[in-house]
Amino acid sequence: MQSTLSKHVAATLARCGTFAALAGLALVVQAQPAGIAPEAQRLLKASTDFLAKQQQFSAETRNTLEVVLKSGQKIEFNHQARMSAQRPNKLRAERTGDLVNQLFVYDGKTLTLHNPQDKAYAQVAAPDTLEAMLEFARTKLDIVAPAGDLLNKNAYDILMDGVTDGFVVGKAVIEGVRCDHLAFRAPHVDLQMWIQEGAQPLPRRMVITTRDLVNAPQFAVTMTKWNLQPKFNAQTFSFNPPVGATKVDFLPR
Amino acid sequence: MTRSKILKALLVAAAMPLLYLADASPDAAPGLTLLREAQAIVGAPLTPVSVAGVARRTTARTVVAAETAATSATAQQQAATAQQQQATAQQQAATAQQQSATAQQQAAAARPAGAPAVGTVVNTLPAGCKPETRSGVEYQNCGGVYYRSAFQGNNLVYVVQ
Image 1 (tube, chains in turn red, brown):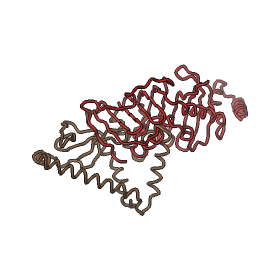
Image 2 (cartoon, helix red, strand yellow; image 1 turned 60 degrees about the horizontal axis):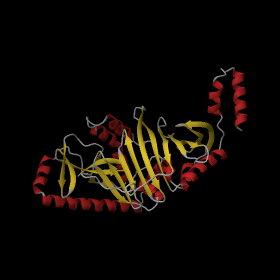
Image 3 (cartoon, chains in turn cyan, yellow; image 1 turned 90 degrees about the vertical axis):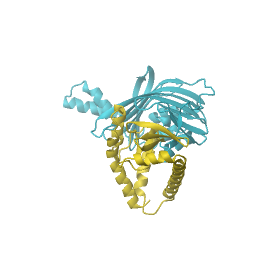
Image 4 (cartoon, one colour; image 1 turned 90 degrees about the horizontal axis):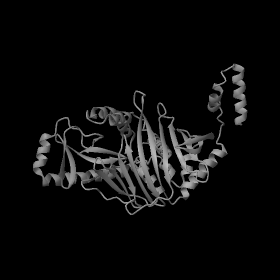
C-alpha cells in the first residue's frame, strides 16, 4: 500500500516537474495509509505488555506542555520528573519546573499531594491498586498524572481507545536510543510513540497533540532514564510532613 | 441540576476570565499569570497530559450537554455533600467566632465592602496577606478577607472564607 502510494506520489511529482528534493518530504506527508497498521499495533502492544510485566521500575522524564493563550500565541512550559513505581500499588512522582514543584506519593492506601514551596499538603484515602488509584485521582480529584497512561497495566487499551488510524513512521533515535516511531490518530488527539528497539521495548517518548483545541497544543514527555532494577526503601513510598507544612483539603470536583 | 442551574453555572464560568484577570497579582510570576490567562479560555480546557484525560474531558462535556431537567442523584448527593461541608464550615466559623470574638469583630469591621463572596476560589492571594491560625486551622488574612488554601486538582488554590 505504502509503496503504491509512494509510486503514485513520485509519478505525480515527476509529471509536475517538482523539484526532486521535495519528494522525500511529500512522501512523509502523503504516504499515510488508512486504518491501523498491524505492525504499529504490535510494536505498541509489545511495549505496554513489557512495562506491565515489570514489578518495579523508576524513570526520569522531561516534559514540555504547550498552552495556547487567548491571543492564539503558544507558550511552552518545561518540567522534569522522577517517577518510582512498584506494582501493584505504590507510586512516587516528583515534578519540578516552570509551573509546579510537586510531590505525589501513593502508598497503596493514601494519596498525598505536597507542594514544598507552598508548605502545603493534602491527603485522601485512595483505592488499593495503581490502576484504580489513577482513575480515582483523575475522575474524583481532577489530578491527572502526566503520561500516567503508561503506568497502567491496561495502557494499550487506554492509548488505543478510539484510535482509527496508525502507522509506523520509521526508525528514530531518542536520547541516543534507537526506537520505532509510531503515529496514531483518535477523534480528539493524535498520539506519537517512540518505542525502544530490541529486547526491552520501553517507551522513550510520547507526544499528545490535541487537535480540538485552537492551534493544537502538544504535551510531550521524553523518558531520559529507565531503571528496571531500582533500589527502593521504606521512605520511597511514604510521606512524612515536613515541619511547618500545613495540611489542606482537596476541593470536591 | 435544572436547566436554569446549568445556565447559571455556565454564566458564572463565563464570568471567570474577568475574575482571573482581575486577580492577577502584580508580583505573581509571569508564567503563572500566563497560565491563568490560558486557563481562562471558556470551554477550552488545558492541554491534556494523558490520553485517558482526553476521554474524561470529553465525557464531562457530554454529561453536561445531555443532562435534562430531571435532577440527577449525583447532583443531589453533591449538593447534600456541599451543604454538609457548608454546615461544617459554618460550625467551624461559629466556633472560631466564639473562641475569638475580638478577632471576629476585627474581621467584620475590616472586611472591605467589595470583598469577594464566601467560597470564591482564586489562584493567587492578593498582596499583603498575613498567616493567622484560628482553632488550629491556618488562614491567610488579606486585609480582613480570610482565605484558606486547598488543592483543586493539582493546583493549590485559595478559598474565601
